[in-house]
Image (cartoon, rainbow, N blue to C red; front, side, top):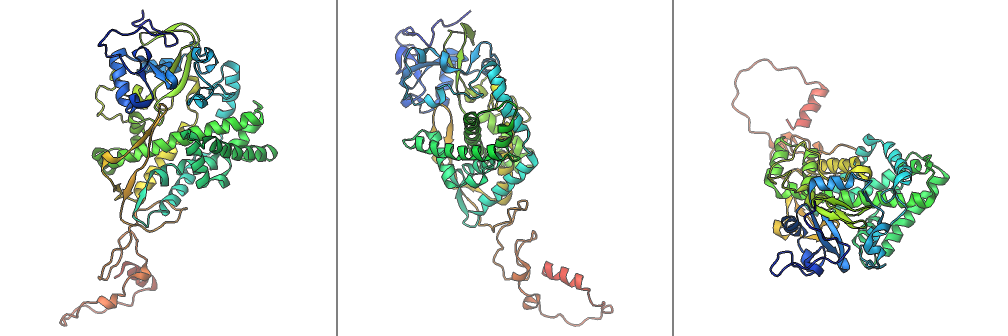
Length: 492
């Protein structure tokens, strides 16, 4: 039985005067863009109160859509391929001409010959190639590369004592790692990072930036087609599914952009939580929570993608008490779904050990690279905090800003400060090594070896005045060369 017979593909009945469903859009529906969506988190909660776990909304140009707010309903959506598809070619507003070719969300809406949009046998063919290529990734090697990349990024700002962790860390580390995994480490540089960010933001130069990335992926495809190596791209090309060059490029784009955006957001969100929530930092420092557990908590509270566009009803059905008509579109929504009061009545309660969040989707289209994203965040955050244990936010928390859209909430800046640190060898594990303090005593440096022995003052320069003579034991024999070296290293 349905609680609301309206369909988002037709004309919604007008609510009576004074009804809280009144909004700036046709039929009193709320828009997920413009002034009505300045705070989508708050809007989702109001929609939950008004409509329950599934609510009617409007996308850009007042195109009707459903947003799925409930945790269970989101899982039902993604796990029911017989009822819902990701093939937008059956979407009623698109068929009726309501969605124009220049619609701002067209890059997300338009059907493409990739596994995340395909159905049935074609989905199995393409997904099998991507999954098989993922399975060849050496995770130990990847984690070492994440560590080296993190060390290099921290070296670039550690001596200055301040940094902005979004553009200088969170937006760089995922691209460095993904270029290595795909087999094009030579393409990783500031230009590639800027092009990916620009293409995903949908700016006036987004098409040129997208072209820049696709040209790099095209060169990579040609090289690996001619000479395969042991990397993701080569395994994708040589898979028995027999992907064409166009299919290879499109799936490389899908993997690169999805992994980059998701992991950049995850890194920024996790670091913000560590820096702004005292209990979070205390649990990490006290050993009550590990970095991987902190990452999972972040995936609950601030998933990298707020919503995923979209799913489309293959038949008349029902979801969350709402009648869904054939051809209706639905937004899979991890952000409000993770906050469903039916599963999280107390949002302040820890979700430690619970991985049932919606951050990586589910069903046939569940993210195949989620372990890579977790590894980048786990290793990156842990190494950064090890190198900079005194790191702290360098602005009032309320001054932090986000760039929000239907798809995600991207932290714009995360300024931090810390005591300047020396650079470290990128091939070695990170160590907490502050700069040597300025002292006049005989033991310069710290016990962890931050000061070079050669820079320490000579013991004779600060030798205390001799005490009055007192008879004592016979003199000990001369120290061995090893003993003298050890005492010299200790500053004795």
